[in-house]
Structure formats: C-alpha cells, structure tokens
Length: 204
Image (cartoon, rainbow, N blue to C red):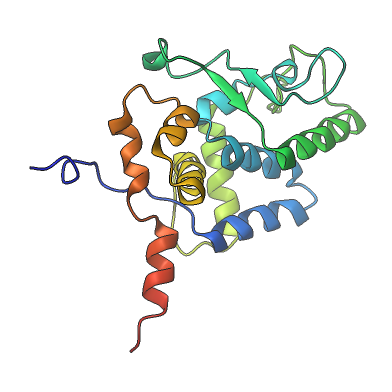
C-alpha cells in the first residue's frame, strides 16, 4: 500500500454555502450573536471544541484591553504537549468580531474580567463541549442544513480552507498543531466543497 493510499478518509467539512448560511443565520438572529462568534472562532482558528469552551476573556484581550493578534492556549489536546507551539493566531476579521463581542457582553451585564469565561453558560461558568455540540445542532436546523454535521467539522473546515488557499501542508500542520504530518495529510484530499463544485456542473 502506498503512502497516499494509507491516508485516512477525508474529513467532513462545511461547504461554502453552509458556512455562509451558518454565519448569516446566527449573525442576523437577535439571540444568536454569541453563537455567531463561537462559530467564527472555530472557522477562523481551527480550535477544537474543548479548546474553545475553555477560553477566558484574558486569553484574547491584553492588559490594555485590546484583542490580541496571537495568544498561547492554556487548554489543548494533551497528546500534543510537546508540540513546538500551542499558540493561536487570530484573523483580522475575527479580532474585530471579538472586540464587538466584548462590548456586547458589557452592555448585557455579562462578566468581562480576564478570568471570566469568554463564552459563559447560564450558570456563569464556561460552556461545556457538550453544550457547544448542542448549539451547533440547533443552528444547523435554523440554517436549513440538508445534513447533520458534528462540531469538529468546523475545525476540519477551517484547516481545509487554509490548505485550499495556500496548498502548503506544512503551514496547515502548524496551524492544526499536529505532531505528525500524517495527521495533516487528510486535508490534501478533496473537501466537500471541492466535490460539490465538481459534481454540480456535470452534464446530465
């Protein structure tokens, strides 16, 4: 068996239309802004669900009150403990959304101290990964997805988007924080968007 043949099956990813529908639906819904930012973080960073759930305000905001361009993760996949860098870089558009989100939290009377949860539960603590999965299922219905996807598909989508844009698998490995390039090679496979675009134009 060749190295290419041994690559794991391609990951499930959101198509471009599904990404647009998810962000549009949450962005336009009066009760969806927090969840819109959660999905933007997932799509903009490729963080895992437990890494997103563990984020605190002080992780993304510096001592001057500005949104950081990069920050070290306090919670991450333990098997990657010896990876060179457990650091996340924020896209410019996401930094703007986080600035707006913190202003919104302040206006809503939500806690915004550095130690407080960035995305808090009704009890005031951090959201759980299970709750993130429930939130994603809810908004898939609202956005009228034709299929059911897991929250982890947002990470796959972010990394697939990055590979499609750069064709640099080593760069994707760094963003994904994979110890082995073999783990990252799944993103060289055609994404759901690639398949969708190819098939929709078939003559028939």
